[in-house]
Image 1: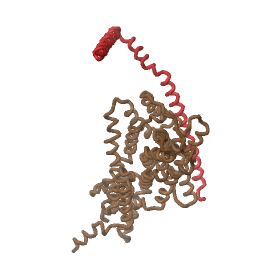
Image 2: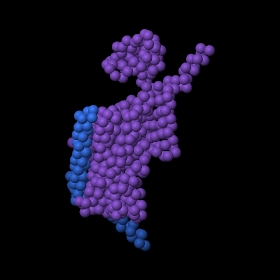
Image 3: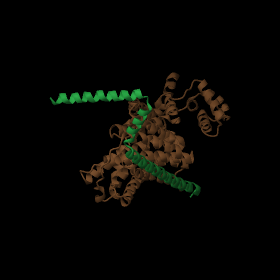
Image 4: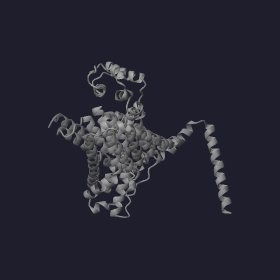
Length: 85
Length: 440
């Protein structure tokens, strides 16, 4: 044994490093699980948020959206009826 | 006749030293392994070729201007350089003895400004840095090349399987035991007096067990640049050997019944989760371990480019053309560290030996951790996927899949093994951060 201090340093680094890797990845596991749960629960939320934003916009924009919706549904309706013939 | 003699004395054959010859053969061996045995050819071809270039006698491709001047300059140039280094040359001894003593002074003892003054004299008489030396300074000395590769790896990584089953992160953590056990092994070897490794060097050797080329090179360039050649060669050679090293260990530690365990289908992962994950990882790194920020920061950046879907051109560049360019430069730079003087030592043998032990211990720790998790959790985990925790993406995951198929031809483990596989990349980068924090 030339240098017992070196051996001790090695052991300390081993314990510290392994411990930290586990702690960090545990935190990561917890946060990933939480994030997935949150996103899973509020999956419809992005849609709700976007309608919220729409209400903040000027009324002209939302009426334009309605117009576009009407045009699209009319087009879809016509397409379907033509397909059936 | 004198001219002929000068020509002969300037030839490679006349100046070839035994060590250089051996290293050229080592370079050829690496090329053989890469070309005929398909051992990580993308890296071993540039590394092997760089190793041959670095050992061409008199060319000094891997030397700085100062070292080149010391190596080959006329005695009339050596004297002012010695004066700049604050040394006196004994006129009675020959030029060869002068070169030896100058080399010793320049690489230890001399103050930085003295070295700079001597370098200026060398540049003044027309010596310049060798090509490979410049590559090394730009690519590895600055740390840029391994980090760019890590960004490309991030852009190639799909975290889907990991997000679907986050517990596999523990397997990636357990496999990092290989790193720290090897570190301790290297320290034990030197405290027994067999080898002479400092704690920094031991840490750089241990990281071979992370089975992650860019991480190994990054850590070695920070903690032990003098061992970089041997460490990089060991890391890449053993990564290529994963299909040979791992299966016997995996079979030894598991029963036939455990190998047949079927895992439940992974749930689909939404795009939003995949976008948030790299950002979350980055924030955790920023909060807990800023020293891992260079590695994991680039990794997360690459992954975000992949997943966000609005910068496909950048993501495409990061995972194809950029990573290819950087690989060429990185390989040649690593080759420049394969010079006879620093590579042909007992320590290199020690590093090669410890490296393979590191892989073995990492694999076993991953498998044992998976068995432990099987005891405590409801969802079944096939212990074979634990072995994929030693990064080596995607080779280790394929090995787990293959060994699983041997036991049950209908049991496909590949996607399940990708979880611990990418967890291993994160784990080894975290381990690297801890070591740099502790020792740097």
